[in-house]
Image (cartoon, one colour):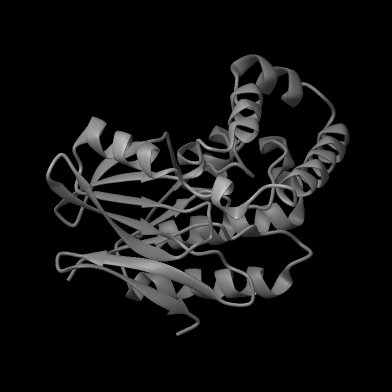
Length: 242
């Protein structure tokens, strides 16, 4: 039976070797599990630009994804809030299709919406304002024109500020807003939504205009990982390592 696998929020970086090893081992095992792998954002803890592919760590991850694609597994990803600067250079190096969001597709016969998930956290207005700024074409072009070392330093500074701000916010504010979810499901009339970002693994039911819709929230990868496996019979969460 053909199957599709989804992961998100791996936050890969050299200072988290356990997670990196977990993910590389996972990629070695995927060919026997499914025909496709989709990463729904935050593959990396941060991404300073595609010219950072010369970094040995980044190159190792890209090579592992390319190796998986070479085994016949379709690999795709959505950029997350940590790695939204992933671009065509990374796509080529990793043999990965970089998707826009929301991405509308059919997963084993079921119409499915895919996105990272941070766009649904509309109660966090400060965060949404920040996202609009840094994801604008003007900001992106200006930032990527700076030397790589400067970009690394600025990203680290932004991460520190972000953690400070998060510590002052109620957890509910940083979760998805139900009205934002319902609005998206109403707009596209799809019965299934899969996203990450919040790190709150779970299955939620939404009734939108009398229609039952399911929302699958992917978990993060730290000491252990998990993935969502979907086939014609439905979806289920799976632990990694098994």
